[in-house]
Length: 172
Image (tube, rainbow, N blue to C red; front, side, top):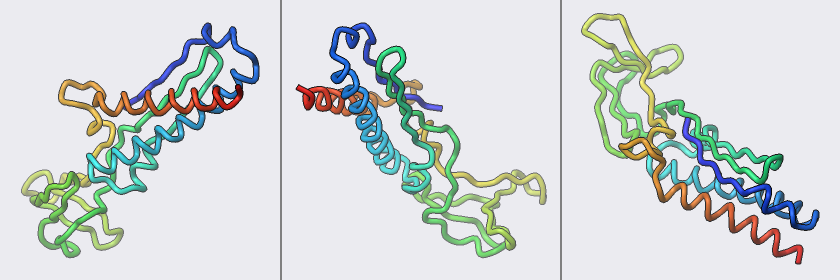
């Protein structure tokens, strides 16, 4: 699972009036929602996943016990390969799909007749088989070194901070 976390120090908020702290909490929630939308849009762009798949895997969690915390977790579960699948008439021929934006033919793949599942054989024999999966959003949001793409994390921090400051300024 990929997690993007934005924190504000509780000690800095203690000296503020109660209504300003409350406004900061509301700004945090609004910022987390906005940041979630941004991460979903980027996920759809860089992994070619469907909007519904990205929306189901990206959440926004906020908390304010030990300061203001916004967490944007991206579930590391592969998406279904629903988008742009061609060929593989029930039980015949390989499937061709473009799950990452580039066309690829999956050798020894087929669609089942009953449920329409997309499967591939691991060898030349009938079994074992595996299901074909699409992009994993949590993996695709990481660079080759394993760190979160720097632009994505910086954008989330900026969005959340701006929303918190806007909410606090409205009180004054």
